[in-house]
Image (cartoon, rainbow, N blue to C red; front, side, top):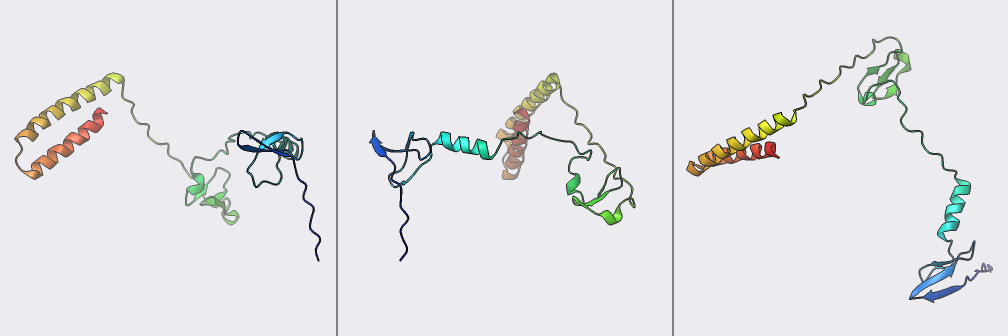
Amino acid sequence: MKAKKEQIEYYTEVINGVVNMECKVCGVMAPVSPSTTATTCYECVRESYNKDFPFEPSVGYKPTGRPRGWAFMKEYVDKDGNVFHKGKEQPGLKGKLKPTVIKPKPQKLKLTRIQKQRMKADAYAKIHQLKKKLGKAKFKKDIRKITSEIKKLQKIVK
């Protein structure tokens, strides 16, 4: 017959309908569920993690010298001649291919505040004309075309 392991009973008390039990490490009362047999308070848990797992903040981003998305390219050759196929290095091909030339993206022209205002004003004028047309339109195909144009212009206005 196996001997039953002795269970230590910790002091419990009910305060305002909440069951509280003493912490098995420091003895502070902590709220628990009624079926709990032992507990450790949040302060003791925090201290145990600080002792066992010292926190080392991450240094952050370290540039590799490779362009964004190089690991997703079918084939990328860096300036040293290392060849990568979808991010995996191919040592057998080192120095046999020319370095990959990365073309910079063309930058979008940024509209000034006055240009944006002009676009909105033009869109409002166009919407006004289209709404006049919509009142005169008889066929469904014409109505649909006009309403779709109005919706596109309303997106510009927003």
